[in-house]
Structure formats: C-alpha cells, structure tokens
Image (cartoon, rainbow, N blue to C red; front, side, top):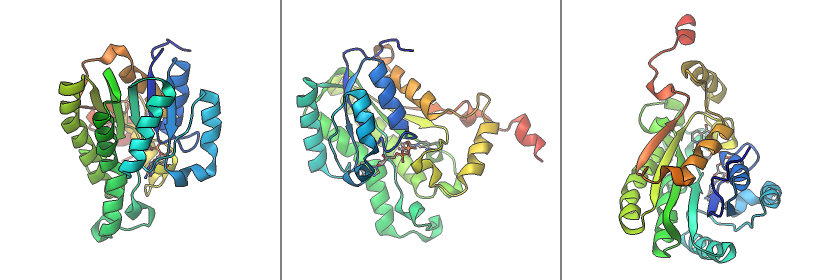
Amino acid sequence: MSYNLLKGKRGIIFGALDENSIAWKTAKLAHAEGATFVLTNAPVAMRMGEINKLAEECGSEIIPADATSVEDLENLVSKSVEILGGKLDFVLHSIGMSVNVRKGKAYTDQNYAWTEKGWDVSAVSFHKTMQTLYKQDAMNEWGSIVALTYMAAQRTFPDYNDMADNKAYLESIARSFGYFFGKDKKVRVNTISQSPTPTTAGSGVKGFEGFLSYAEKMSPLGNATAQDCAEYTMTLFSDYTKKVTMQNLFHDGGFSNTGVSQEVIEKF
Ligand SMILES: NC(=O)c1ccc[n+]([C@@H]2O[C@H](COP(=O)([O-])OP(=O)(O)OC[C@H]3O[C@@H](n4cnc5c(N)ncnc54)[C@H](O)[C@@H]3O)[C@@H](O)[C@H]2O)c1
C-alpha cells in the first residue's frame, strides 16, 4: 500500500545494516511512498554487503560515512545534494552502539574510553550530522529530521547500560538543534522513542528476549515493530506534521504510560 506521502521528496537514510534494521524498513517504505534518497552506513558495516541489495531495490546510491567523522559527513551531505539533484527534505538518524554493552562491561565498571566512543557514535553523531546539514544549508524549508531513541532516557532499565545516558543526550540535542533549525531554516527535528525491537543493536542488550516479552505484555497495543516504526516515520517526513518539532515521540504501543497490565499482575 502506498499513499505517495513522500512523492518528490529527497533524503538521506543512515543505519540500514540488514533487513531487520529499522532503517532498512524505513528505506523500503520511503521508496514505496515516492521518495528518492541516499543510503549511508559506517564503512565497516558495509563489508557485509547487505546494503547493496537494499540500494538496488530502492534505486539508491550508497555513500559510506562514519557518523563520528565530520569530514565523512560533509562529503556525504554535499554528494547527496548533488546526486539527488537538490536540497533534502528528510534525514533519518538510525545509529546506536555502546562498546561497554558489546564487551559486557557493567554500568558500575565503565571503561571511559569506550563510554566516550559510544557517546560519540550514538549521540554526538546526531549533532555532527545536523551541524553539517545546517552549515551547508542542505535542507529545504519544512524538511524533517528524525533520530531513533529509547525510553531508558527517562526511566531506568539497568541492562541498557550507558546507552541510557547516550539516548538522554541525543534527545536533548534534538531539542537544542531543533530550536535553531526551526528558527533559521523552518526545519523540524524530533526523536522517536521506539519499543524494544529485534535487530542487531537491540539484541545486543543483555536479557533482550525477556525484556521484549515483558514490554509486549505491558503495552496495551503490543510492541511497535520495525515496520510500525517505518510507518510512523513516514508521517513525520510527510507534509502533515509540519509544526511538530523538538519532541520526543513515544512509539511503543502505550508502554510508557502503563503502570502495570493484567498479564503482568497474573504472573505474580
Ligand atoms: N532495537 C531496539 O530495541 C531499539 C529500540 C529503541 C531505539 N532503537 C534505536 O534505533 C536505531 C537503529 O537501531 P536498530 O535497532 O535498527 O539496529 P541496527 O543494528 O540494525 O542499526 C544500528 C546501525 O548503526 C550503525 N552504526 C554504528 N556505528 C556507526 C557509525 N560510527 N557511523 C554510522 N553508522 C553507525 C550500524 O552500522 C547499524 O546500521 C538506534 O538508534 C537504536 O538505538 C532501537
């Protein structure tokens, strides 16, 4: 099904690693909705070569960029505008990684070099991306920038480790840069706070399976899937949400406002 919501719009989509990725589903749907876009990911992530399949299906070019490198981002943005034949209407930041989580370091025993690396990849990269777009004046008026986040930014989920802090920082950047992008360029900036989702990044969190089932049972509408997230993102890239900006938008089947559910009570 398609509503042509993004007909004629141009963009950049970060973070499609494999077909489970939220960015992968978003790219496929954006294509179906009439958008043209460049796909990008870290050079190391591309070694798997999966992204070539997606690029072919979407008629997209791929420009590698490490999202922590301003130089890479400058090249990405200027080349994208050139390839797509005009300024951009949407950008999806779908990037997250914690070295402490990967290497099994507890929150109470951080390796701070790894903490810094995860912070740069997961949070500061969003600022770097927006600063590059802003300086190159690469966004069209009424364009839309979205990053993905998780509710551990507001409430504690112990196994989410230092990613919780990175997400809090990311959401703050969306508000702070959202102000300047709104005032100066009429561009909106939001974060989507997504349900736990079975992807490479998601499954890296300790105890993920149990947590996924718990969230499913706690959410009146059930967990939002990667496909659901792609669909929600289309609305934020469309012209029907022009005045939504500087928001953290929960997309979680109602989890964030549920104290307890009947199914969870029955477990006790
Ligand atoms: N899966 C979940 O449970 C869940 C829940 C809420 C929010 N999110 C967020 O959704 C976003 C997408 O993650 P996903 O779940 O689709 O997992 P994913 O593993 O498919 O995607 C993460 C992406 O980040 C990319 N990346 C890592 N380091 C990078 C770098 N230096 N430069 C550029 N790209 C880099 C990876 O290559 C990968 O494509 C992340 O921000 C994640 O935190 C995920």
